Image (cartoon, rainbow, N blue to C red):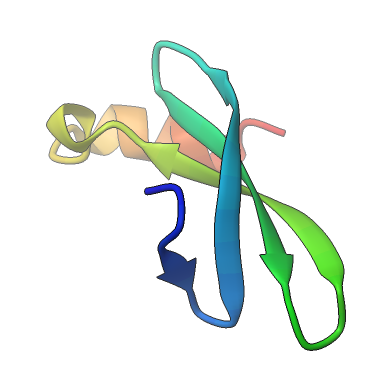
Length: 58
């Protein structure tokens, strides 16, 4: 994932990892905006309850 792009954002490093997924730091090179991108573990993506919880966690 590091070095890949998600939309206009380039993933630069892994910030954290937990039971549901991974959080990466990414940057929009044109405007120098930094964001966090949360990614759900692939093996959990077919479980509707887990996906719902993933989107409801702040």
